[in-house]
Length: 193
Image 1 (tube, helix red, strand yellow):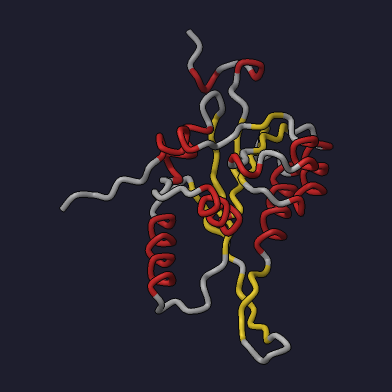
Image 2 (cartoon, helix red, strand yellow):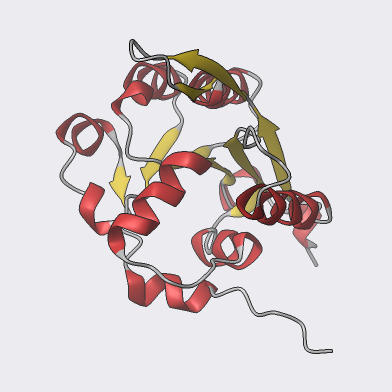
């Protein structure tokens, strides 16, 4: 009898890593009018059917004002991620800027580069056979080319308003649209007290 750990290589499910551009994802959810929170563990479980799920990597930057209501919500979210063994949080930063009128604002930095580098390094280190990209940003096209030259499969997971981004639609091996019906199967449920 053959156990799952002794399966021949040809029968092994492909290893999967999921890469989420968190800022892009949250902005897209708002544009779509999604009013509920998505549980990343459920999302990963649903997306990885047919694969051997390795890790979901979530890329974002801490908000500049951690004491604000949004900053406190983000910190609770980071704490939830830290409790998951299958999700890794990768943080960039917000850099302060000043416009010509003297108004201060912040620009998110490092998120796209961190994701692109990790996706390419993971392909070269053979961490995965397939990558799923949850982002609607053409900045990733060159990284996707590098991943595909290593023989890796790229599944692009756009939200409905992102599905017509030609450079990403052309380069991916398979699109898997994350519409509201699908996302409702991944709703985060708050524990009852």
